[in-house]
Length: 183
Ligand code: SF4
Image (cartoon, rainbow, N blue to C red; front, side, top):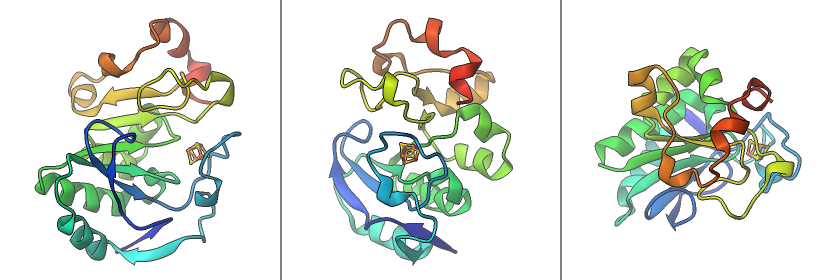
């Protein structure tokens, strides 16, 4: 199985989730968020096709990391390959964070995306909305995005947010409205 990547694995990130993390920059994103910081990752024919086994073997060689972060691009567009890499990351005792422009609810409706959720610890979901952009947020670009504890959410059949990262106290009142969930 192959995966289309925008760049090589990037170790030692401290801004793409908790701890010291290796980032997998996937190539291809359908969301076209105005103000996106990574427009070069949108083209589904861009980047390079790499064997998933090769990515896993490269990941094994990177030492002293707390976790793997799936980013892009949108990792959910390559759900099967990301599932295999995330499963291998868990076998290496790494935590797995995933950034996506889709919502958790949309992922639940799509079988491959739902399977990928089973290998994700923390999901940062939703499109980047420029009007909601803030530098006063942990690990997310705009206030509409949610930082979700995936295992708890699946177990309790509801979205469980990781409160310590959701600094915007008005979040629940404003952003749980359907027009924010399905933009
Ligand atoms: S989902 Fe992320 S990569 Fe895709 S357009 Fe939006 S901000 Fe850019």
